[in-house]
Length: 85
Ligand SMILES: [Zn+2]
Image (cartoon, rainbow, N blue to C red; front, side, top):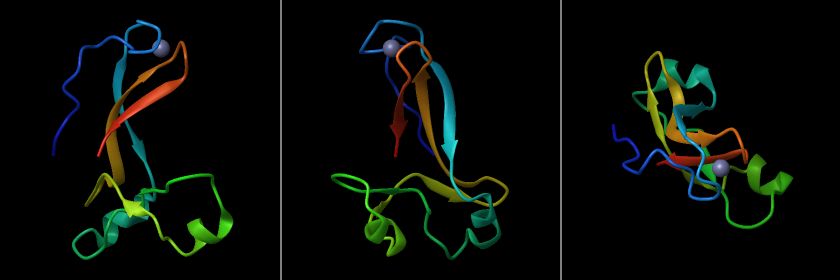
């Protein structure tokens, strides 16, 4: 597992960043040994068919009792999240 190694200042507004994570399907923890992360990155605009067919690139980690997740830091001032995947 890795973590983001950046200053704790938002690159957009300079406010303090808080560490945390984005979590996907917690049920993934039950099949973590064989299943890839359900967090997926898609290029371009959101689309039902792309998401339904899960054509994205799996990102983040999947672990027992954690589910699919990606560590990151967020800025509550400008509502941006920087994820480590
Ligand atoms: Zn910010």
